[in-house]
Length: 123
Ligand code: HEM
Image (cartoon, rainbow, N blue to C red; front, side, top):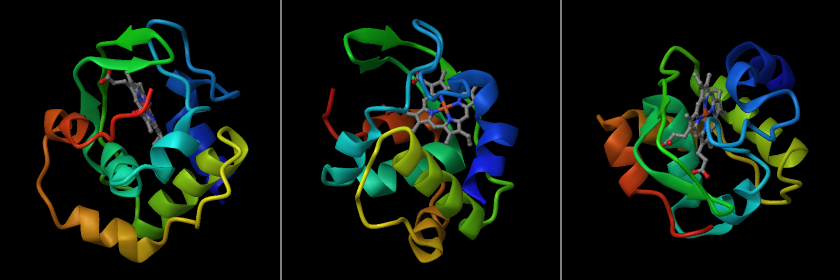
């Protein structure tokens, strides 16, 4: 179910390959490091629910873009989407993200800038 959600909601920016577009949209291939870091699971969920804005450096390239929020997706859809991204593009073996983890992050009111501040320090 995550693959369809990805093509409908994310692919226009992050591309079918998850490689992004250099300088405009970051890749998603490094996200195993993010999900494994302390606070990384919560951060990834927040990015989808609240969007992201501000300077972000990934793999030596700095992005200073705006990602829109996807609040309209259900908890299970956010989980399916992130699990698809993590296993397909990031080759992650992390424990899958659950709908209840998504629900806990939805109960907050974060700005896209707040979300960036909560990013764990990984390259
Ligand atoms: C950043 C995932 C849709 C544009 C990110 C990051 C993730 C992500 C996880 C942060 C990467 C990191 O911290 O290393 C997704 C998913 C999407 C989606 C799962 C579908 C729900 C989009 C769309 C756009 C977009 C449609 C363009 C309209 C961006 C930009 C950034 C970003 C510009 C960097 C923001 C900044 O510079 O602070 N995305 N994305 N994303 N995404 Fe998305």
